[in-house]
Every structure is written in structure tokens, then in C-alpha cells.
Length: 78
Image (cartoon, rainbow, N blue to C red; front, side, top):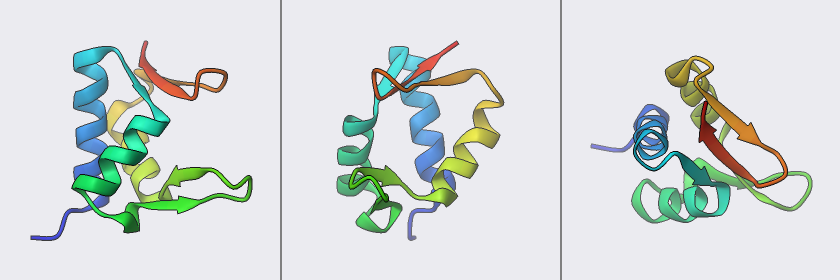
């Protein structure tokens, strides 16, 4: 069965719950290797980013309990 954006989002929430943080670069690498390249794209700034579908599912799942740290390029449990 093909992984979905929901599967990626669930992995991200579990990872952050377990470790407290998730760096964007680590997430991108893991998602590419384990879920597929189609969940990653290069944004207008030239940086690798997660697909809009993944981000939407992720936001819905964590319901505000995870925050993005713009300076550290990571997500953290709040």
C-alpha cells in the first residue's frame, strides 16, 4: 500500500512526541527514504520542504501542541 500524507504526518507527531524536537533536514531525509520523494519539494527559496498535504495533515494531528522554530528550522513539542 502506498504511503499517504497522513502516514507522514503521524510519523512526524510520534517522532516529536518521543524526542521533543524534529529538525526539518532530518524530517526531509527520513521522508524521502521511507515514504517517497513525492512528499518533498523545493520551495521558492530553494529549500527542501514537505508537501502542502503533509503540512495540512500534520497541523490537524497536533492541534497546536507542536510549534515551528523558525530560527532553528525545527518543530518542538509545546
